Image (cartoon, rainbow, N blue to C red; front, side):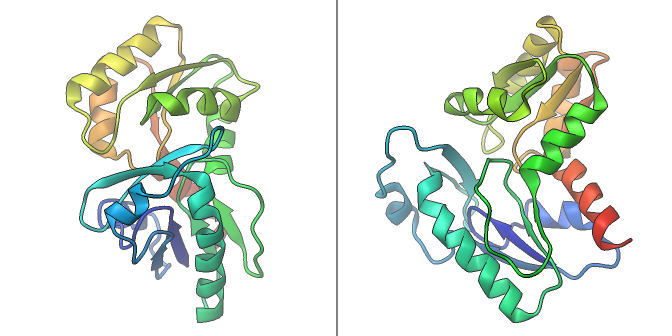
Amino acid sequence: MGVVTIGQAPRTDMVPEMARHWSQIDVVERGALDGMTADEIAAVPRRDGDEVLTSRLVDGTAAVFGRDLVLPLLQQRITELEASGVDAVLLVCTGEFPPFEHSKPLFTASPLLTGGARGLTQGTIGVICPLPEQQDDSVQKFAPADVATAVANPYGGSRDDFEAAAAALAGQGAELIVLDCMGYNEEHRGWARAGAGTIPVVVARSLVARLVAEAVEA
């Protein structure tokens, strides 16, 4: 299976954790921003209204950029992976994207996460996202569910940030807390749980990996 990140590959911080659910899947990674330097990425202007995204670069730092930058690059990586002979492709970003051209099965993280979360509760979904600029996008993405949002960055946020974000969502009546970025890991889930009390916490990469395994390894 080809795995495409909006940042740079390999995602040594993420894919091994997801691959624990993929006992019969070999993974080939590509990144939309492969080959670009941090300065080159930062130099690309974002238009007003462009969706703001963040992802990890291969050196372990994080970059913030607009969706417009990566859309054509993502299509290129999907096409390249299909040409290389993969059986399916997974786009590991919980942002919203238009349809891509593909000839093999293409899984995108966002609908897997939002559909799974809406299926787990009929009440308010508390969403933790990386950047304040992404909060409105998270509300729209999880609609028509009632949504409350908070911010804690997976690329450098502290335990206190996650505990405070989860506690704030619990105080707003959330019945499920979702970590809405593929950059969040099990440590972040643990930090959020410490602030969430008895409210369950879902981490995007785990839910997405499990659902893809159901489809690909069936």
